[in-house]
Image 1: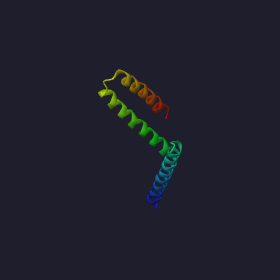
Image 2: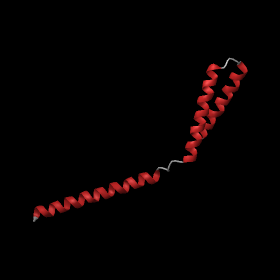
Image 3: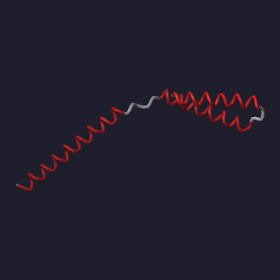
Image 4: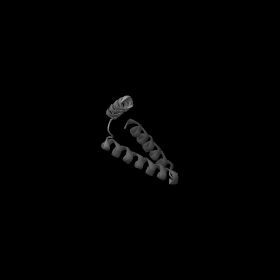
Length: 83
């Protein structure tokens, strides 16, 4: 009977450890905010716009247009950083 009692104590200890692990996992999940789909959509849109402008900057010959693109890129970088 002594061995059976030890097995039960070990099982209870493992159960308590598992319960504590689950509580810790719940706390970690509660701390991390859920992803914001609107924010993700906005960031994706801004990044796509930035990629398009970078492509345009590579092929543009006109210095005035290049300056406009550089200004637009700077604005997009600022908006991405804020998002």
